[in-house]
Image 1 (tube, rainbow, N blue to C red):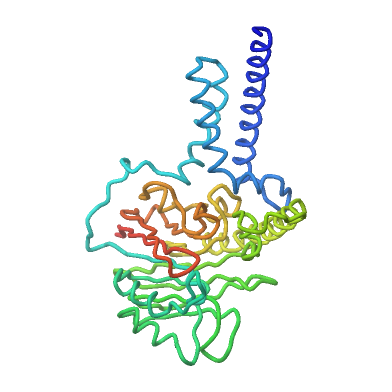
Image 2 (image 1 turned 135 degrees about the vertical axis):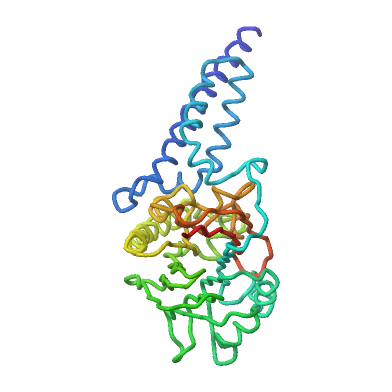
Amino acid sequence: MQNILRTLRLLLEILLYVITVASAIALIFAYMASVTDPADTSMFIPFGLGAPFIIVINVLLMLLWIIRWKAMAFLPMILLLFGIPVIMRHVQPPFLQQYEKDTEGDIEVMTYNVHIFRDEEWNSSYKRVCDFIKKENPDIVALQEYYSSQRVSSDSLGMLMGNYPYFKSYYIRKDGDHTGYGLGLYSRYKIVRSKEIAFENSDNGAMYADMIIGGDTVRVFNCHLQTTNVDDVDIAFVEGVTSGNDNDVPGKFSRILSKLKSNSTKRASQAEQVSYEVFASPYPVILCGDFNDVPASYTYKTMLKGLKDSFREAGRGYAHSYRDLYGLFNVDYVFYDPETFHCVYYDSPMIGLSDHDPVIVRVNKNMQ
């Protein structure tokens, strides 16, 4: 009996070693997702998506080995310490951030994918979205999956939101001269010029507007990068709410992964296109929108070049803005020029008026 127990303990020990090594490799692959162009290889994409789970598993394994007083604890410990910059994109200890009071130089920015003004049940939400924006009262509102029509025009939306005298749009799909689907940018600051950034073979796009803020010009980008094309059927399958007698589980996973790989490559190219425009800007930049990608991704890393992430600087807790898939993913961001701004406030309230939650950021402008 003792020999059997000794054998079982040995097998368990070996299994724990194997799991620890495998989890360490997975964590390395998650880190690699940020620095590897999906056009070169797509093998790291699933690990970037699963980074929060992989990080948690490594933390638990590290604690287990520490409790057992085993040197194996150093493997996940070293990798976690090495990856702190990636980990901090996902979660921020609440005690580290101290919000500053409103000051005269503050600029409040909201980015929000409004899902063509439809909530999660596909009920019309434009009135509720406008009421929410009016209550929050940001200075700049960047909307993705924006939709205006003859019945609900851009002017009427601006009036319902509050006092936004300046507006620019990029209708990627037009229904008429001033109606369609795309991006909307509302501002209390005077817009002196704007530009549309078209993506090849895509229903997504980006734009920027130059605004006069405090006597200086600031270039504000509004972006909606390539979607994953993971539809409601795919989401239901991943969330485990499809029929239990499904005999094509490997096939469905394969199709979902194929979509992720294809669109990650498109998204990476679009991110490089936007990043080029950011670097070409003669003015300080605020870059916001729905990037459709997670913090441990090549898209995120590319868009962040030369900028700072408002969540990283002023967020608290776990970052999540996409409501489907159990609300575990963050894909909406506000980045900014650190030489001109610093972030003093970050929030992503869970309001359920779209399949995304808004991101609200307050930055302080210190132009001379």
